Image (cartoon, helix red, strand yellow):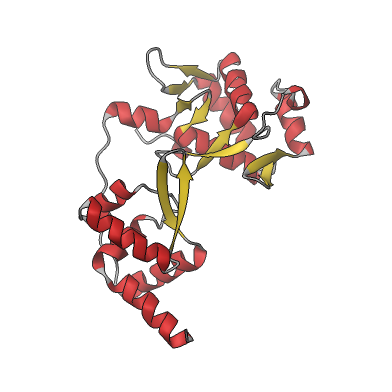
Length: 235
């Protein structure tokens, strides 16, 4: 296919209002399920499925699975740049979002995903560890702990070499179902949550998967990793 034909095909995909709404909903970098994208575009699930298939085939979207769940994200920075450039010419409308309940907001802020930390705080924590290169991306969808990371974890009382890795490794990214971004999972993630709870930085809410950061924990997160309340609290 010629370059002109490629451009025309891509332009045709983006020209549809529903597909443009789907792409716009993904501009923040998260991966979203089909149902949420259908709501954002104001279309039925069946119609959204058709549009998503076309966007996947056209190379504008990438598919990520987590168990039985399927999430869609932009195929790369080149797609987001193209959408943002078009928005400068013709600004896109606001993306439809469902208003969360108080309970949903608490779970989105911070919660347990199995036995590791998830939600906005889990993602912020993981991002901070990656930015400081305490953990780095590794093959086979895993994280590797650097020498600097081993030292930092030891400083909060977590002996990384003593943690037994599973067949999936010591640490791995887990796609967060509310943030559609990755948080830290695996044996390291489990031990980190236990350590933070043991220090009194975090506490689990009885009868819920929600987790709360204590004043001591908020201070520790800021001093240790530069994480402030604004980075993860949405209430």
